[in-house]
Picture 1 (cartoon, helix red, strand yellow):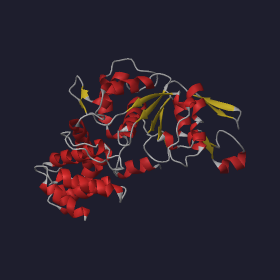
Picture 2: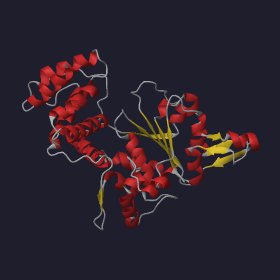
Picture 3: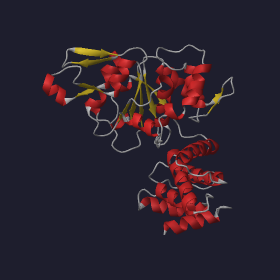
Picture 4: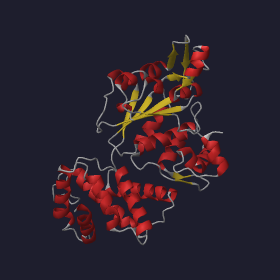
Length: 370
């Protein structure tokens, strides 16, 4: 019995369902309402895939919740790329929802977001191409039965969407093993004198950023095999507050955290702090600020607020207060204990201390900063 079958049999709930499971009702409703042309082996038309990501209301009244809040044209370009023979590269600084968009695109297009290669400095070529079952190999020699397909090989054979996370963390020689797959749509099996040819419906979504340490730049040959879509940080404070609120609500429900009354005020405060320090200037444009070494991404803001909700639920009165988010903000801002602490202290004393309505937040931050 597989892990999934065991979970289903016992009725246990997974901590984080795959997108195709968490939003199965929405995908089913979209498929039923979708009367537009669908590329070969796609579960939905490009229009329905974009609607799934951006949200909308179907003719039968079904509400499709937004999975991504951002420029519609970027999503349309990404979806259209997958309908061609070009692979898709989602590029952006950390925390711009690259992985989130990648997962939901694969779920909507193929109904399966699990054909995933996680890029690290130690990712071997076998993770991209194929490996071997060495017991079978020693007993019977090279054969299809002894071959262990990679997620990309499976996607090629089944006409599915494969995902590669953190492509630029993968060593350059392993990256280049993708070139033949993406250009020729073929995976040679020299040990068997055979090859695997991709069937229609196959494509690849990769994500990458150039802000982390340990980055391996893509070769020009490999970069040419991708259409690149750059996912920006949220354009306005309102958009970022909306994103954080939605994701915190989803994560909170999965963790059985009670909704926090008046939590929106603290979410706005966290987003304001992150944006000001990230941009190097206060919201009103009057005060220049030093920026810390971290990215202070939307994803980190979601984490800070979620942790604050847990503190309020388990050690407070259930109301999200400044003291519940202060420690999380400190941990997100002060990554370099020497330089970042100076940046944070200056921000506290020159901005937070003087801002109307932020006295409680200032005191809470001072307490955890000591």
